[in-house]
Image (cartoon, rainbow, N blue to C red; front, top):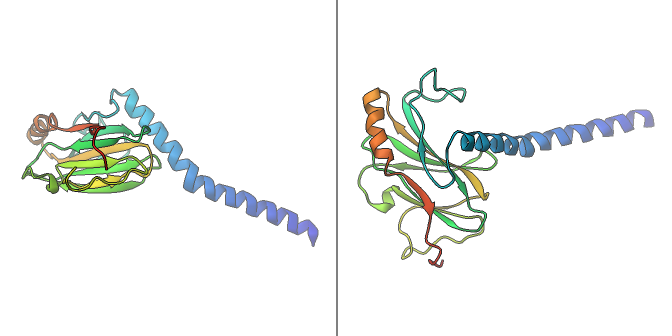
Length: 185
């Protein structure tokens, strides 16, 4: 009987480790490699970069939508800062998505024309552990990042070359910058 118990316990241990690695380690490795690849392609931390229009020649991920224009910003809030994200206003569909260091999408905001901060054109991202600012300090949507590093992605509907060119001029207004450090929560 004992000769079956030891292998069974070892098998369960290996299975539990495999389960842990799959759920916790693999996403972190994937995101780390993705962020390094994005940074190597010229995307700077705390700065949006509009990617080229998706075509079979420019496709770098498995299935990006050819109908969307993507702007990417890497963030690093390791000094407990806040990040102010501004999306240039677009008349068509646009959204801002936030991804943590484990590939989790922890927030998405639909942005649109109108210019009012509460519409989502300005979003404040707080470092892990930072309290949200009171409404007198910031009126737009606020989120707390679950990890110190991650990616912010703006998606805009741009199914034609003409629409992509319009997004190019609008994306110039996108910003991803540290929020003033002298503002207290």
